Image 1 (cartoon, rainbow, N blue to C red):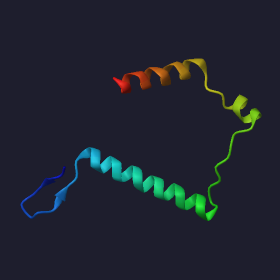
Image 2 (cartoon, one colour; image 1 turned 60 degrees about the horizontal axis):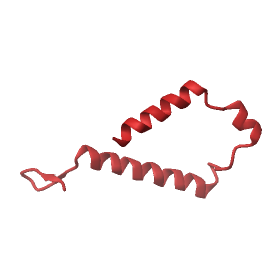
Image 3 (tube, one colour; image 1 turned 90 degrees about the vertical axis):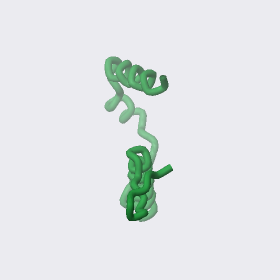
Image 4 (cartoon, rainbow, N blue to C red; image 1 turned 180 degrees about the vertical axis):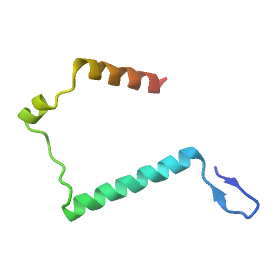
Length: 70
């Protein structure tokens, strides 16, 4: 639900603005994939090993996700 000002224009909440930005990013991503300027593919085993997450980074990521779920 949006808050309205005196003129009657809609004022987006921070959550609504974030959702709009997310949709815009997704549209841009899809456009790049469609035009071929961005290719999405599986990582090779060599790439997985080369760019593997450190155990410390993995634990920090798990902790952040756990905090966000509460």
